[in-house]
Amino acid sequence: MPSEQTVPAKTPPDAVKRRRRGAELERALLAAAWDELAEAGFAKLTMESVADRAKTGVAVLYRRWTDKNALVLAAIRHYGDTHPIAVPDTGNLRDDLLALLANLNAGRTELATIVGATFAGLHDSAGLAPEDVRLSVRGDSPSRSDEVFRRAHDRGEIDLARIPQDLLDLPLQLLRHDILMTLQPVTPERIRSIVDDIFWPLVFEKNPGEGVGSRRWRS
Image (cartoon, one colour):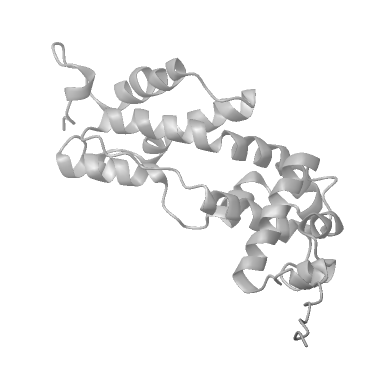
């Protein structure tokens, strides 16, 4: 008599879903919050809409963030952390700055436009000014240009002790301003102008006969 074969019962689809936990779950929640912020905007984003997008219960969100303001700030910080900007090392300051601004232009336009549109909502909802948002998201972390300028200092191109911090911040501030004003990436010509026509003359003394890339700091 042939042996009976046992046919395994089909597992219900819901039963095979792996439950997300810990850091994996938090990453999924923050990604859902960012997508909701990008698509719906701050005013329409709710804890319920994020939970629905993440396919979880709203209580899961409230166990981690007290309200949507805290969630949005965490989502902005998470987006920045998971989309790092490469800091170039070309061997000279001018090319480093041009490459850094180009990298920021390509990788931070979406972040800048969405965060810019979120400022008013965070101010109305939590009384946060743009600088408060920046400090909450970035904290005391150094600017990406700090490494570029430190290497230039080590090569003898500039003397960081003699250059005001406001001047060092200028290229990134101008790029950020242009993106927020137009909600578009800036042109390569504008990036070159920021470096060559605005920043460079303020930092270096003009010396006829020297190319831009070969100028050195003069005390």
